[in-house]
Amino acid sequence: MYAYRINVEVASSKSTLNSINLCLFLASSVIIGIGLYQTKMVFIPLFIAYIFYLLVTPLIEFLGRRFSFPKKIYATIILMFLGVFFFLFFKYFWESINILINEFDTYITQFRTFAENYLARLKQRIPMINTENMMSGPIASIIQYSTTGIKDFIQILTLSFICSLFFIFDPLSLRKMGKNFTLIKLEKKLRHYALIKSVTSLVTGLIIYFYLLFLGYEFAFFLGFGTFLLNFIPSFGSIIATLLLIPVFGIEERTGSDILALLIFPGLVQFIIGNIIEPKFMGEALHLSPVIIILSLIFWSIIFGVYGLFLGVPFSLVIDAAIRSSNLKKKLWN
Image (cartoon, rainbow, N blue to C red):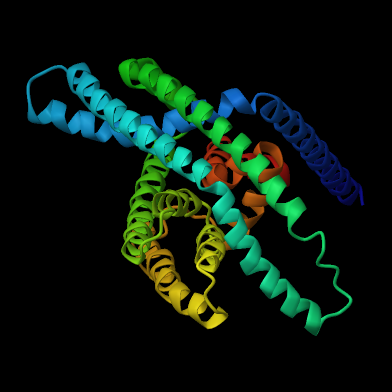
């Protein structure tokens, strides 16, 4: 009887301790989430710079082993090439924006005609729908949101490039900090994910770009670049990138069957690369279930907005590595 009472007390104390640990974990998670939300304009460029550092470092180390020059020389050469590439890219980007601004009224008129025709058909089938205010409000909000998004994107990309310079030219202190904080496997997972995702997204974007260029669309560059970016969003990015082609095809005032026919090739490309090729090369290295990935997208998008959709998987890999290295599961449930 006495031993039974002791076992009950021990079990009760363990249950109380687990509850306390769980409450502390939830409280600390909320505090960390608030801190990340308040510092997202600093944290996001640092995290992107770190991923960029992971992608560039193997090339620098390979050149260092291949030739006898110091690694910083190769780092400088690589960064100079990347700097020239980004300069030419953004120069062409702004030239394309100027062309879009000059022809904006024409494109809006054509798109309104396309949308009003389909809204009129929708009104005939469903008379209860109010289609009068479905055009002016969404177009204005999309333009305003796109302008703000492009400005923030360029700002974050510039800060990320500057931060990556410090990571690349001072790798020793970063590696020492990484060894003390988390597992070396985390770097391999992040590098593997970022490399495969970058290559597959780039290939998809280039295919869509040349496809639209072949069809004679002036928005080929924007849509190719948008496809490249959106494919970094797991599961939903390829769908959004394909649906964005609908208003562009609609500008030419084609019928619905013509638009669907034009969407077959982009949809097929997205399906083959996103569902066959990418999983084959990605393998089981992430150890994240599809449910965890979707939940992480929702969670990180709440904290970081749109950027959380793009960086949700890398953030989840960091959290997963931190939990595994600290044995947090055992502390919470054992």
